[in-house]
Image (cartoon, rainbow, N blue to C red):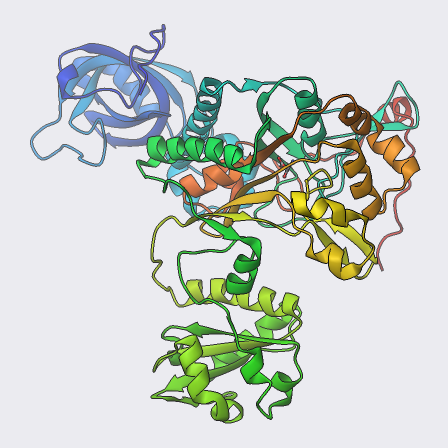
Length: 597
Ligand code: ASP
């Protein structure tokens, strides 16, 4: 902990004093955390971001006036007090506090600020509704948990800059007022006053700029940068979030992976003292989806998906017999779930597009309840294939592969949580590699890029871009990769297309015609035409990294000034209407949609 800067207000921080300081005259400044008035003695726990120190006002030492002043202080007042560091009496030490062996016997006191009784005090924030915490964010930020998170966040950013700086990366800023960068989301737009009728888009990521930096010979780029995506509210997303953005030239996937692993290793070691495996294992995208039902598999527990389509098709059970795919998971100890609980699962599965969920329980070497009677004929083969044992629950999904994977993928996460299944490890790291290049949107009958349109296909797949065959296009693989920790995607990137003709082909598949290619991406195509090095990179979500390090699932807890799920900043009250003058200057006329009936 750095020592406090000596000022007229303080000589030490509130977390700094130890037994070795006994006898020193010191000055501390901070907020009143707790005060206790015992008549002749007044106790105040003074708090700053480094900790708490107990101040004692003894009328015999500080005199009547200071003692009176001390009796008047209240929660969250701001004080500066001078006194002598003294050992706490026998039995009065507080082992929970770093400064708990000493107290400061005050000689003089200055009240720097007073406060009415605050809507909540830091100690009670856990029981306060989050809306209130966001409204009075400055009170919330005084909590030790919040200041620890900000400290960790700062440290992570510093390690990112130090580590990558040491490896020769340059931090370069890219514009916020820019043109749309397609990352699969909606843009935030900003009216351009000087060009009436025109708009900037806030970047969904610096993707195109970092690629152009490579064309510009920068070689190794990094930036801790804000990205803006106008997405529908989701619990762990923010409209503006922070990425560590990285791009490198003359490299392959393994080079990017090595840089990121070294960085993650340093972060986890320096912050938590935890070793990250070296190397982090790789898993094919296909395996992740087939075995875990997700492209960000949580590998802390088993419950893998088993393909039993062939066996299911031999039964007389219509739901199984006629389904394109049937898969099952074995839920260890799930046999103790009640009928009510398993019925609720079937209902829950409908939220993921399933028609229902079939279950049964393993009793001895057979099945009981649910679909037991339908699968009796395949019992022996089934148990052997999926390795179920007495007391387990089997859950089946029968549907199109996408739905089967989604439902069972979500189900294993839900049951791991509900049944408190013990994780096999605290940290489960994996690189997911060889993603599909394209994804077909049935509703719109068009192809989308799975990562983004600038991601390179595997070399052997480049000639196949000319195909119009649906099966060929859906089989193409890309040079994209994601780093996944405990089921969270910490980041993702790819090797890029660096040939103009290939990029044009890719745009055509995605339905971006020549005129749009020119108007939206002309600058990129032109840059690729003027000597682009092979390049690639990645972006790590800083907010996610800090969430995992701080063991929280609430993204708002790791951002100093976050927005609510509806995109509101409750403290400053944004978004808010503009006044007439501002609208006029921006050449904007408001036409609100009719109110919903
Ligand atoms: N631009 C990508 C993203 O924001 C990351 C990358 O491909 O480097 O997800």
